[in-house]
Length: 486
Image (tube, rainbow, N blue to C red; front, side, top):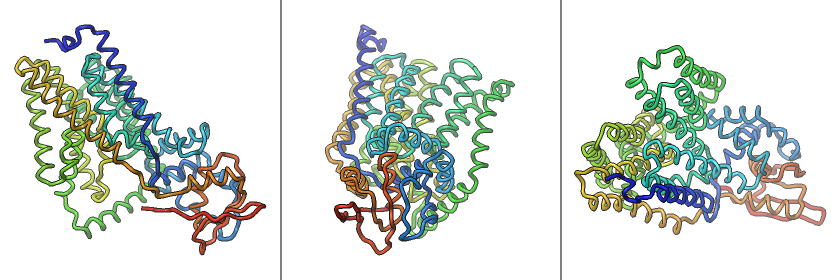
């Protein structure tokens, strides 16, 4: 039975797909119901303003620093320097956030909306990727709903971090990769695959675990085609670009190496093992593949069984596929979603990045996981050897628990206030304060990053202070400090 038989009018299917896409966009726009920032987000905010961890060393205590002085750091060269000083990661994101806030403003909503717009672009790119696999049939809707209701994807869509942009670029790279692999050996598609892969890596280095899958599959399937002059140029340019970046940011890479060494020492002290790395990888992979039981029951047995269930369903899909194209697409999506996660675990073992092996790192393969699940359902529904009632039951087991997890997350998520700098900035602008005493210079930097461009205020550091003190001709106001740098 043709998939279009589910909805015999193709136009109706296209309308439903469009409605699902619009619904996903509204989910991104409306959530979260309340936003609070955490430490890593403050790092992104400061770096986008050209403020590095070492900027505080330029200023002395009890010496006034004006907002105009801090604004001088708000330039592309300083953003680059701050990125390198941190650990050289996320330069393209930091640069994008810098430009966006120059145009749109410095409220916490402005910073958050940059990630939201990127996530919306990702959902649209994902829609185009689904068309390559489904030709706009009804399973496009299933894939879009799975991604737009994924709690990790929605979390990254408002986090002031580089993850959303990394997901966007790796999704766009995969679209061009697919076209080069299975449509035609056009150098432009190979070039765009490489260029967008480089962009993804320069958003977040750990997107490399997806890029590794690209490289392995290209080498195995297109080895000879890659050796033509045009394709050598198409791959050479992106390679030269990323090599130049790494050469220019070598001090930052050394910083990252020291950070990884510190993480290794903490991991050894905590008794963290390679087995624990693989358990975490299996957990996040299973949940990303919509086998969400490990989200509710975290025992190792449940995690291992859930991961093995995902493998079993993949093998069943291969057996039930009706043609070579279906098998090829299942292999491809399994590699992007599952083999890439294994690469990530191995990278974490190699770099000793054990204690930070958490769900954000697995978010880069989310589009491929959701597309894999939708394509698996497509194979089950189109296979003459599987009853449609059984295929529908498997679909329910995938989709309903995922939606319940999403609803539970929306209802139960209550962000904890770790910083009150947005409140401080609002009080300053509402009352017209022009002087503030802060306990740390970083407090001044973060407050200034949340004030409108051009707002004039002087900052003083008093190491003995335990509160913010804001001054105006009429008097002073004390504001408690909420600063949880964990």
